[in-house]
Amino acid sequence: MNFAGKVVLITGASSGIGAATAVQFAKLGASLSLTGRKLENLTKVADDCEKFGANQKPLLVVADVTKEEDVVRIMDETLKKYQKLDVLVNNAGIIETGTIENTSLEQYDRVMNTNIRSIYHLSMLATPHLIQSVGNIVNVSSVNGIRSFPGVLAYNISKMAVDQFTKCVALELAAKGVRVNCVNPGVTVTNLHKRGGMNEEAYQKFLEHSKTTHAMGRPGTAAEVANAITFLASELASFSTGVSLPVDG
Ligand code: NDP
Image (cartoon, rainbow, N blue to C red; front, side):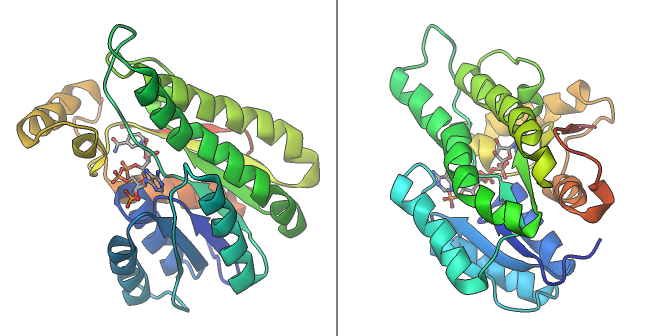
């Protein structure tokens, strides 16, 4: 895999899977545009990218993917710096717990706006540039995009939409040379669940439980998911599009 001369835009690059993906692409020679809501966290990731061989300082775009003007700015600033886009990694996401009996419309909107509407919007803006570069999109879905898990209704719906979006747009853009794939991670050790409201004790129990729900007896790491993302974005996956790739032990 070699991304020298390729421009890669990653959302949610300030933490977890997005941060590990940024470092992995940096190691493979990509020029990076990294987005998240907190400059301090993005700066730390950019420092890691440089440490591991980024050929130039990543562009950092502080932006909220649920805000339309921010999404437009992500694309504008990326094109202004690099004049092209080769790979879009739609990774930013949140989880919220709740069932049909106790998920408010406000929660539903927050999860859907972050996890799928933002992907729709950014991909829409990126598409003409990806057609031009014969580039590709990798979306970060979840095992929840393939099957339902109880207690996270809005999250399940949002991730199933990510898989459907992946397959639909893959069909629409295949003839134009643009591939669209997604990864479906199982439980991965990041900040996602704690930020979604789990306290430390509940999170440790959740990780312990994940040893019994993954055949390999452990949760995954962000780097393992990043490896699958870079593979799908690379020329090694040149005949794969519309794929939902489980990374779930
Ligand atoms: P983290 O919480 O560690 O990272 C989430 C990233 O998304 C952060 O960089 C965060 O940036 C960004 N983000 C969230 N909301 C917004 C927003 N409104 N605007 C801009 N950026 C936003 O979690 P993960 O690394 O685990 O999550 C990455 C993806 O992986 C998500 O889509 C998640 O659903 C998916 N996933 C995770 C699994 C897991 O077990 N961890 C399993 C399966 C899928 P910031 O808050 O700084 O703005």
